Image (cartoon, rainbow, N blue to C red; front, side, top):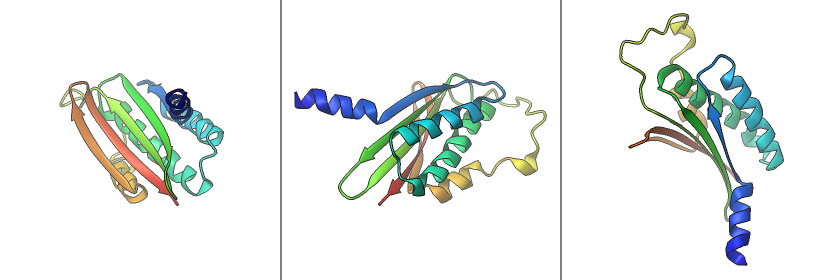
Length: 140
């Protein structure tokens, strides 16, 4: 019975969705994440930061990586703190030399810096299926 309860609690605090390489995908994912965070009653002090981290990681996958990309959210309640983990997994870098026509360099390239500034912990994991960029935001 305890194992079933743990499974249910874990399922209630994890969410996955695809990040398609199409216009408007990042804003759609952001809206979906906002609804999930509200359902989970994630503390307001990290929701805005979490949505910005989601936007930056998803945008990176759409612009710079090969599809498919997938977002995974985890909300873990620990002793005295709660951690929101945001992961975006993609298939690795796009083909070298790929044109990024229409992308203004003055408006791009700061996503990693933003994620580093907002996250308590962050990193990149390389694996057989591609690359996972992750960030954790901790609420006390």
